[in-house]
Length: 294
Length: 222
Image (cartoon, rainbow over all chains, first blue to last red; front, side):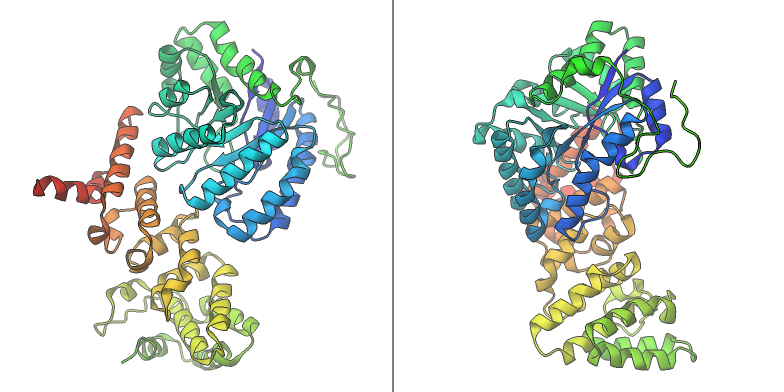
């Protein structure tokens, strides 16, 4: 089955992960800009980070046969640093215009402060300007309240709900999101957020409309094969193949296609994996002879 | 006896004979040296003073019982810097740099001590920001055995800190002043968290009731 992992932080992952993902059927990934685990102290760090998402990481993914897209935005945690937040938001337009940037994100709430709300709103306006959809992170703590506030803000701003993906849902928040026009993402983690079996139960209860799953694998305890593993559990639970394909392919493709920069037909073929190719004089090779990838 | 005198006495009693001259010079550099010299001695406390318990057992604030000698030395350096600073702005800049440029140990010392700096409320943004860390010992140095959050955090930040303690398995009993700061919004957040855990088929922290104290109190009253 062809798979899109619509939320995975590949910058934090290894080439082994890319190989395992490609052989498990993952054809394309979307990497949202986020927090690196340690706060950045200057806006210049974001310039380099955004450039690596648009450049080196896309190149690296292609070397393993995976199409790489990204979303660009100021994450909610770092929105609380007022000087930094202003500088980063001012530089976003030049990144949002680039090919391969398929949404504004991940934005949203963390501590649910006024500064977070302000940055959230400003970036939704940028999404409107650049005709991009929006990827919204929901907080770990006080999640239900954070989800309700996020939906209320989207509505207040009059941003089209079908262009918003609310991520990291659980049993408490999914029905609230489905009651809106927004899409509902689910992060399948080894210990927290959502797991494969609970996800299968949610699909049996709510169906597949506007439902998306991702691994959100990053530098923490996480697993970049969680989407294929969820497929296996859904199958074992008797969920129909068409339903599963909708969740892991059609839905994320339809959501990001709204950017006008995510051409599903182009994904039919794997990217060119000639590992002699270079990016800024660097390749993924470590001095070994380049062999055609099989 | 002032906090500074008590600390100085304790640190001097713990420092090895070989490092005593370093401490003397460090006190001088911290008060009258350049900002860079302050940063160097602030860092050097790990190597020269070490992590043995400070054990300030002269009836002072209990929290200091959890400190190490390096923690005590670092607070001393900031206190003498304050006395010698030409302006409040210069002191804020110097003290903030010690936190911002510190490694995890230096930041922990700084956060444990911030409640004892002159006019500690002015450092609120740094302390609130420290709560956003994913490094658990750093979070604990704010949330646990530290009077600062209960004294200075606005309700929203205090509540987020308590919820993060529940999330990360930090015992709520370690949060100073929690019973006094309990509030209906915190009780609501803790109750939603319990619902979320139940819906996911997961266990609920045994001490969650400490965050719901306000609700319990209301129930008893009515």
